Image (cartoon, rainbow, N blue to C red; front, side, top):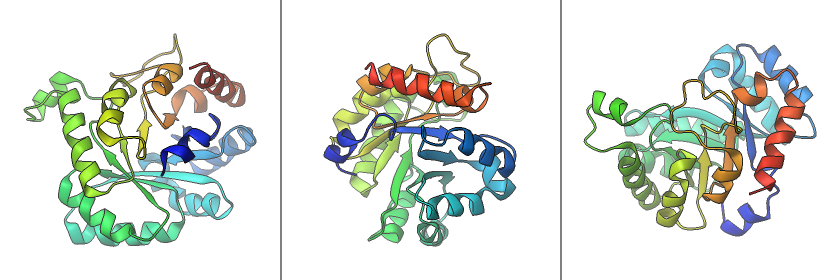
Length: 237
C-alpha cells in the first residue's frame, strides 16, 4: 500500500468498522444500515466463529473491503498454509502477531497477492503493568517500536498499533506502510476495556492510515449517524 494511495483515499475509505456482533444476521443488519457511508469492515473472533468467515467471503466478492482480524501465530508451516487459504478469500487485510518468524512465513505465503498483512504490535487493551504481568522487559511504547522495525524488515504491509504510538511508528516504517489504529474513541465516549485510546482526529494527525472503530458505531442506536460523525472528526484533523 503506497503512501500516495493512502493519501488519495477519502476519510470515508479510511474508516474500518469492527463488526463486533454475535451473529451474521446482526452483522448483515449493520452493513445494511451503514451502506453508502462505510465500505470497509473488520471481522474478528466473535463473528468469525459464528459463520463470519463465509460472510467475509460474501462481502469481499461483492467488492466490500474486509479486514480479517485473526492475529495468526503458530509454527511457520501452519501460518503459511493459513495465509494461503486466506488469500483465496479475497479479503483486503489480515493480522499476524509481530513475531519475526511468523511474519516472514506469512509474507512468503502471500507473495504476489493483493493481501495486506498487518503486524499486531501490542494490544491496545494492554498497559505497562499488563506487559510486566506477561513477562515482557519492554514497556508498550518500546515494544511497539521494536516490532515495527521487525515488521518493516519482514516485508509486512502494515502495523496495528495504538494511535498514541502512530506518529513514532510512522517515523520508523516510512510513508508506504499502512498504520492501522484500533482503540479509537470519539471525544467524551466510554473507553470500555481499551487503555491506550485516541480520538479520530488525533489518530489521523498522528499518521494513521486507517482507523478501526467498533463499539462506538455498532453499539449506537443510530449507527449511520455515529459513523458519519466519526468521519467528520477524521476530516477535521
